[in-house]
Image (cartoon, rainbow, N blue to C red):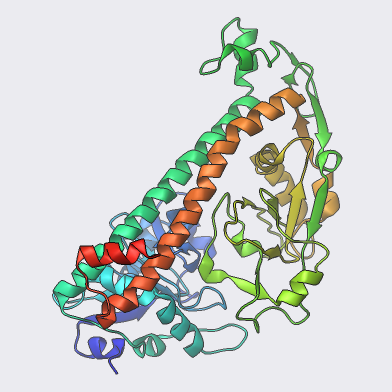
Length: 452
């Protein structure tokens, strides 16, 4: 059996562990500087730069031995969910510093191993499963260089590696296109909310005697031309403020079996705070399960289409950073629940999309963060949520916003579903390509795609 260690032994590959905590502390982080790649940035097989903290150049020079290069593979080495996950460093991320909790594998001889092929190989479900099984520790699994070196690998001739990487890379390219499109669509929906319900652009325009830009006359007619005082400051005339509790029909958490979910490899998915990252954002590598019979008996916490999901507790003492998410159209699953660390919210009076964006508004999240940071165990309770003061526009404007934002959110979720199908196809094709069951010729791939 060929292992990665064979390639390390002959110098084709090298491996090193990221800096330990004694070399890099959270107090080293600054607002601007050299990015650091933490394990949290490994998301669905790529590095998400929004998770990169920064350090100053002097500190980066101290840690120069951990500087990442284009084509490096960054592994998460600890944690029940993250351990074994990996992502390749691309042109955008090169020069960053490997974070604590990472292990880096570097291809030294690219005439023998193609980095993109290697990334696909070690990111395959079979490789990730192998690493998780061989990780050390029951409650907090850990990987080390020795374990990763023992990973079984298959390195066909370089032209074949490149052909496989090129073919499967086209699927990754489409997944990336969907991701970027989703980011744009969500930004449009968020900007619309900001314009109508935070900046009050249509009202300011009408107050100045102008037609609101980018808005038809019928929609513009829904907005007033003056303001009134409120506990939130100036708001459009005729609009109201209220509390979330006054508009919510559902505010509940889910639960999980006594003893946790670590012993269940299948069943009904149960998502927690780690999966609350926005609209249609889900890392399938972190999926947990509860037994079907347990889920059937759950009286709360069964997720419905367009539920607003709010991360309710967890984090370091004195610090709470709430997040909001939304799923739908059977993404990420047809049936799934939440655990006790997530709230599920619904409102028929303001609509799910307005509810999502009003809860995700920085002012509301800051209110939750301040309340949650004071708790002995960082987090918020139902009363904290219910007491949050929010804007309540007229029903006709709420309906207009929800109907305008709905196609954007629908497209985000459909793109997310398509990307999941592409990932499944990629993971199905890889072992067939490696075994020779399927030729790397494009026409053979197209035949396989048509049968999916």
